[in-house]
Image (cartoon, rainbow, N blue to C red; front, side, top):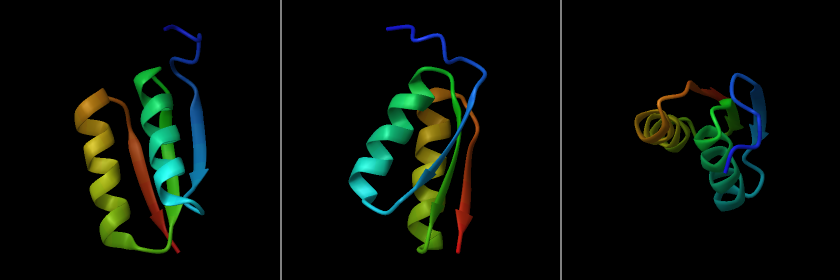
Length: 64
């Protein structure tokens, strides 16, 4: 499905990790570059690496 989002940017907060991960993947599949905020650096980096590898878009982790 093409939602016309290619080239856009999204900022996601991992308040609910599974939901945020699913949303990040869905947006990335539409061509949206995602930045994900979370507390756990290792999990966050792994998730962003998976998203980038699967979709080819930029997935930036921000731990804090």
